[in-house]
Image 1 (cartoon, rainbow, N blue to C red):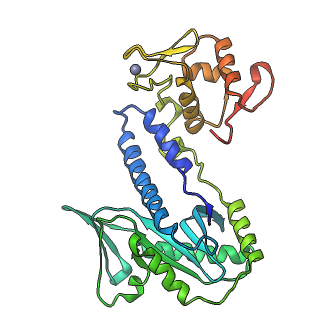
Image 2: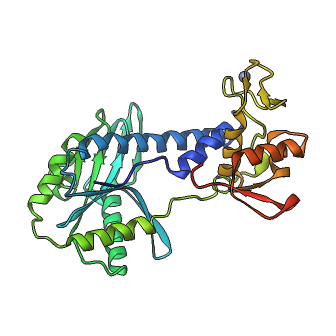
Image 3: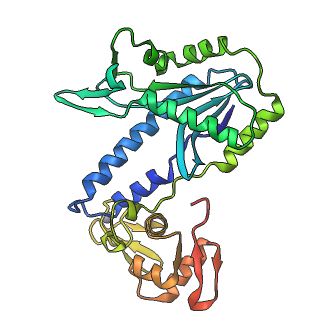
Length: 322
Ligand SMILES: [Zn+2]
């Protein structure tokens, strides 16, 4: 049973907004686009495992995607956690093209593609660390102990994994996505003793979900940018020209002449994602390039945002479902 679905993280949504609103020529644009591509590849890799995980007995396993928990002042994130009455498995999923080599000495991992190559974080050790943090976190929350296994799952069919022979310690914690079911069944075969009853499983599920904290860190701060770097105005949904011009309830593109009644919605979402999760009427008018505060008020009213304060000081808040 899927306890927490896979979804776009706030970080991916913020990166999309940032890419929409940085000039191509901005020095931070290449960093933003490569970060976005890397995170999207990770998302697609995890998503592709849904097919394999859907073949697990539905009643037996709880599946959590992207749990992010606080332990000793720092957050740790688990790509996929499987939990059942007898054990748990932490899966570290990577979707990298090329060749990944595990070297026994120093536990180093090298990634190679074409002529390029570099040392990357060891995904097996990453999975092991997340498992250890999860164990401690569960202890801290007074949960009954359960064996926690860990595995690096390669979700890219074209990737070649190489390890040195006799590196059993590492090999047993690696699998390709098509072997994932087999891996889980293998672990299940050696963990047959029930540790958690239904009540305890329910308790852990509730604890994990209520303590899950998505990463909503300020993206401008992360990229050392200021709001001045962000392009303001409504973006044309057809040709991406910015800004569109507001005229009698509609947005008109001066380049491709497209007319839209709703193009401002994406702009307001971008404001919430990039600048702050609340907006005043004058901030809206400035961001959407509207001269009249009456029009700004009309737009905000039509969006039905939760608000606080009165008259000029009214603040409209980002709703949870935006
Ligand atoms: Zn246009």
